[in-house]
Amino acid sequence: MNRRSFLGAGAAVGAGLLLTACGAATEAAPPAAAPTGSAAPVADAGGFPRTIATKLGQITIPKRPERIVTVGFPTGTADAALACGVVPVGMPKAAGHPGEIEPWVSSRLQGKTPTLIEANTVDVEQILALKPDLILAGMHRTIPDDFAKLSPIAPVISYEGEAPFQDTWQQQTTLIGRALGAEDKAAAAIKEVEDKFAKIRADHPGWQGKTFTFTQGATLAQIPTVTDPNEASARMFSSFGFELSPKVRELGAKREVSAERLDLIDADLVVVFFPSPDAQKTFEGNTVFSKIPAVKEGRYVTVDASLAFPLIAPGVLNVSWAIDQILPKIEKAMA
Image (cartoon, rainbow, N blue to C red; front, side, top):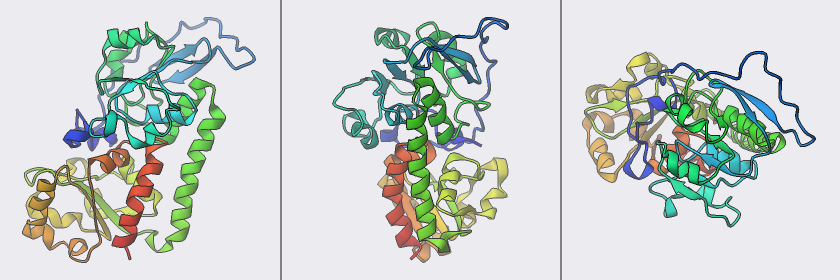
């Protein structure tokens, strides 16, 4: 189960993150890699040209990239590029944020103004006009299909896992760091976040082994909940020291509960993403939900779309931002 299992197809932050019951992205046949037996590129003193291994083939980058375009989700790949000191010339819009740019991104733009492109789609003409020398597409759900459209424009870096969204944020950051010739910066950015998590675990030893659940409260008709401890948001809460509740893990591929069985999401910590105040009012007015022990006792944290997005689709920058936003909520709930 990957990020797509908790993110809907559009995933527009302003409209809410729609949850689906789909599993991992269906893997398309990888595009042909470089011909076997071709001469390997000879790197210059700066480390280029270099060849990067991805699931969609061996990608040769002839020179140090200077004009980066990111496609797919508004964050993740852009996060990694910015952490490596490279401001994209084009990146997806982040609906619901001022200027359609997330706060963890806007502070890293170095006074530059990237062209904002539509998220989760590929406009070949618009991307071509940006004259990229590298395209980052590791968080674009249809990159197995769109690879053939984009690769004639510039080298395309996708992902290492079996399908889109299966790479961890650490994997994506490391992969993009290699593509940019900024391995040290990528490693330093990862270490900074991992050290932040380590300090939180050290400061809150009582959280170790406590259970959690993470659910979307959009409608009582369909209530998706995270059931796989390897899903991105589950790994996020595990980094705080929590463990996904066995009660939801036992749901397996079902990945949702009925309104009558909302008691299944009870845990030491219950986290619910509400896409709107009306949705929250509806859930909190539900008899079964209101009687959940964690809800009654205040061990209950709510998140809106702006916070749910980095929890569900983490990148090296938005993870740190999300920690700062949700940590006080968790501390209050677990006090």
